[in-house]
Image 1 (cartoon, one colour):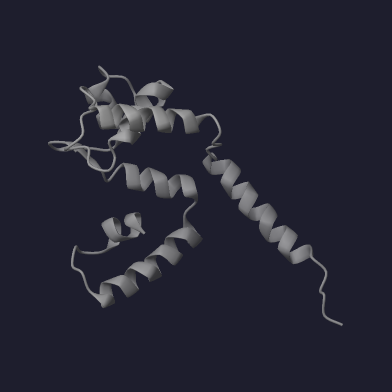
Image 2: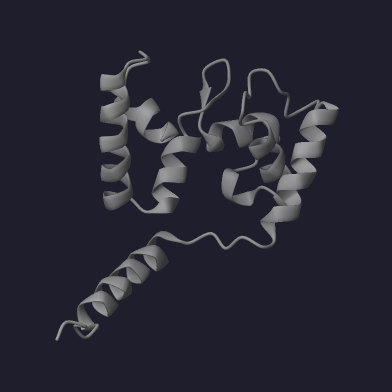
Length: 138
């Protein structure tokens, strides 16, 4: 919902906007994979004054390190400040940010992140399986 709201809609609260938001959520989920949704969401975040996107944040906060080269601890620290990266510090984490970082870091090992090609092939195999199912009607 957050990605649909931030990418496609203006920041006005109304039932009409909420209706459009629901429409865009279904559209996004039908057309984009989970990795693309996460990528768009993460790259809309303002991590500092004029610093948008995970790549820019990782270079700023971790001495020029590219996002794909971040350690799991560094990636978890970036994720920990996402509720409000302008309030919570990546460089000087508060006790709250440290606790969130530890929680995220603990969950990282058990989560498989699908790659773009893997997700497409999974969607295609799901479609094929759905088509191959025998009809239960008699």
